[in-house]
Length: 200
Image 1 (cartoon, rainbow, N blue to C red):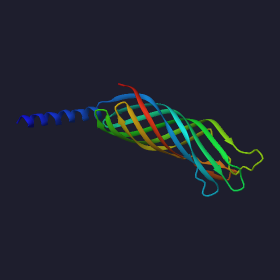
Image 2: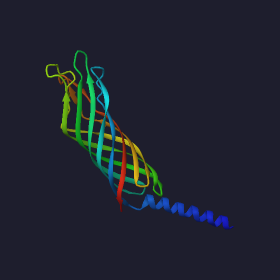
Image 3: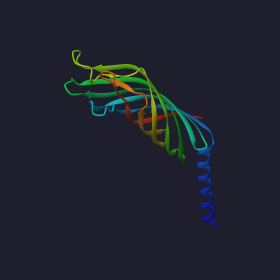
Image 4: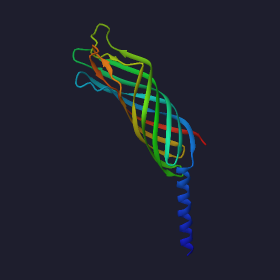
């Protein structure tokens, strides 16, 4: 009988903990940083090799009933090496301020849980550095726009105040290259570590 009561109380406390974590609205704010790998598919016109880039910034999360809204603001670099026949290598580094607006869900309680999310991302270029020989043709030149947009999907794991996120970003607007008659889109995979500064 005693064991049954203890087991019942334990289950009740666990259920209350999960319900509280999922139902009561909350707000969190924190820092994030990580690495990304960008590519610009080109249908065989040129090849591009991934180079590690970075991301660093802030995130916020408003949640309740098992769902959350997570806007973010971070500085990121998308770095690649672009190669084409009879052209010198173009080392491109595009630095931008990215603003993802993500919707998702969460499972778990007591500081441990998993998340899944997706949504649009706006990207505003602050530097469009491309390094290639001036006398060469323009086959490997990417006409990276000052404002770009796309979508992000991903998943994360929360452990106390820390989170690890794995994410894919797909560009939706076309980026012209070469003579301007051909187009590509940016693809980015990122892995980031986040830290929660405070929660309300």
